[in-house]
Length: 338
Image (cartoon, rainbow, N blue to C red; front, top):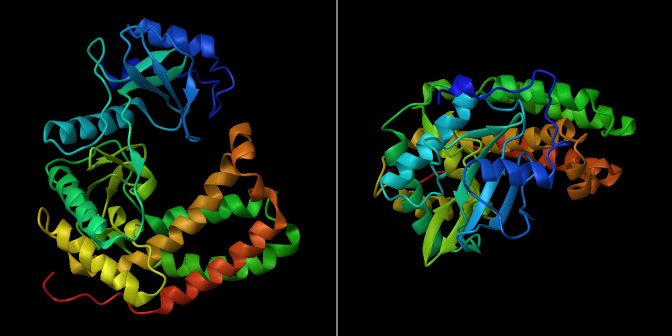
C-alpha cells in the first residue's frame, strides 16, 4: 500500500477523543492480532501506546499515532529506518510487517504493531556504560549514513526556536507577571540560536530523541526504542543527551568516554562539540512549547500539572539564565585523537 493510501479525516486534529478501547481492539483484529488481555497504557503522551497479550500468547505493543502530526510517508520512513537497523543487527525495536505493510489505518487513526520487549532502565553517568552506549550509537549511525530521509524534517533550531517562543507568547499558562522576566532571557537565547548554522556540519539520519529514557537494557544489551522524532541533522544530536556531569570537567570526561566507544564504528567531526549548549538551550525552550501546544490534551494536564503553576515558570527563568551563561562559555575541549 502506498503512503497516500492512509487517509486522515480533514476535520480531525491532534485529538484522541474517539480512540476508544473497542476501536483499538477492532483495529488490531483487522490486521490479524486479537487482544486477549486488557490494554495497558504505556508512558507515552505524543502518541497512544498500549501493551497487550494476543491470542498467540505473545505480548505486543500497539502505537496509535497522533492524528495530523506526521504524514504517512514520514511514518513509513521511520519504520524503514528501524527495519534497516534490525537487519544490520543494531538493537532497535522495529514494527511488525502485517498484511504486507508496517503502517495501518482504521477509522482515521494510523497505527503500527511492535513486539513487546522488556528491559530495565539505563542509569546515567557510569563510564563503562557510557562507552557501551557510544559503541551502540556509533553502530546506529554507521547504518544511518547509508541512506537519507526524504519525508522527515531536517533540524533547523533557529527557525524552530522562533516558532516555540511564538507559542509561549500566546500561552495563557505563562503567568502574566513573569512575561517580562521570561522573555528578557528567552529572546537573547533565541537570537544566539538563530546564528547557529547546522547545515555546515555533516547531515545524516538520526534517532532524534536519543536520551536514556529511550534505551532499555535487555540481556546485557542496549536496545533503542521510540524513533518517533527521527530526523536529519548532525551526529551530536544523538550523543549530547548522554552527558550527565555536574561540571565541565565531568562532562568532558563523559564525552571523551562516549566518543571513544562511538569512534570504534563511526567517525566523528570534533567541530560538532560546539553545538552541545545550543542544542540543550533549544531543547529547554522547545519542551516548554511542546507542553503548551498539547495542553488541550487531558493526558498532558494529568501528567504535567506543575506546568500550570507559577513556581514552574519562576524556575524556568532561572534555568534559562543559567543556560544563557553556558552559551557564553567555550566548547568542551577534548583530546586531539578524535
